[in-house]
Image (tube, rainbow, N blue to C red):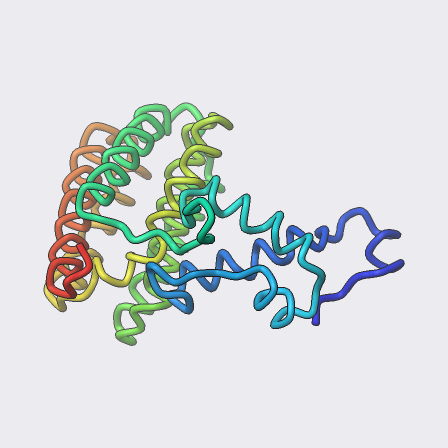
Length: 228
């Protein structure tokens, strides 16, 4: 059961009930606990989470806005089933937003940012060596978030967050092939090296190739699974 009541009302820093439900459901969708095409019903979710239907309804509306759910009039709310065209569109947006941020990165790059990138690389190398794909994808996500943050543009950040939400449930697909997993690490090394050395054009070139390869791998996996 989620926390609530007077304690929550007294501390404005704590998430609202709707925020908590949204965070839980978003994580469950992105991690595949709700399969594409699955119907999400307010009453079942409210009972499972131990909350009223109001915060569940609010969370579902936000997830529709995020592009993770869709509504069929008079039928219900469903987890979005992504097609190869959807994946192409998601990655087209990622390329545009990440390339913009890379082009501006040297203006906002600080020693702290450089260290953050190197720390992420260390985590990528560690999780790759451990063959821990799940943790590797989290470090991968952290890296691309850090790249976008270097653009120092709040609108780009918020747009990227929405695009990333739609991409999250497919991240593991992009590393389904062992060769792709190995190549991904090397690409990340080169991107980070270029960024920390001020080689923005090289960083952008490698990152574009990296995203194109990840996109194709995801589409191949969707077609293999018969879900494209």
